[in-house]
Length: 198
Image (cartoon, rainbow, N blue to C red):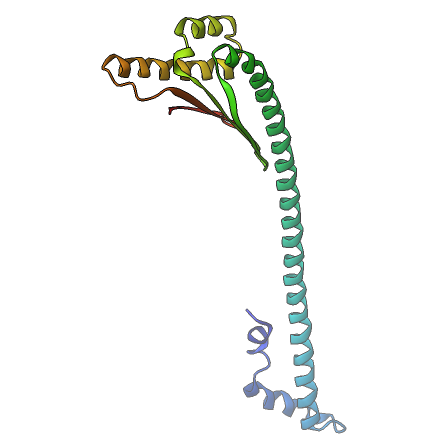
């Protein structure tokens, strides 16, 4: 309810003549001046009541801006924490990758490409290339059994082993189109491995 609606039954134009007629006893104030005085009082009341409502809206706006600032600060803190955790994870994966490289060389694989993508969650992409004929299942199984705690190495070796078995089946039906195996590794969260032939 607005202030005008609140005071309208009390100070309506229809109620003014009886009120003014009772005030005729005051000889020095004319009815026009008295009417003007009542209107000024009403205007002042409405002004001050509306001024309080404007302050209330301003207070709500200030509170909303404070909440927005707090939320932005929290999001920035969490993003920074996530980036730090992601960087730690990338460092661990890179350590595993460095441990993997000597075994890749034993299998005849060489690093074909290496790239880094920066961002909140950084990624490292690498490709290894080697001859299918140089990859021996027995050697892969031996390396896996000796390094079962190196998750990246075991995952890559499992992918190579699966690809080698598929290639052997294709060769058994006299399809020998491919000579090289290419292993694409994405070191990130989560890591991904794909194997292709060329």
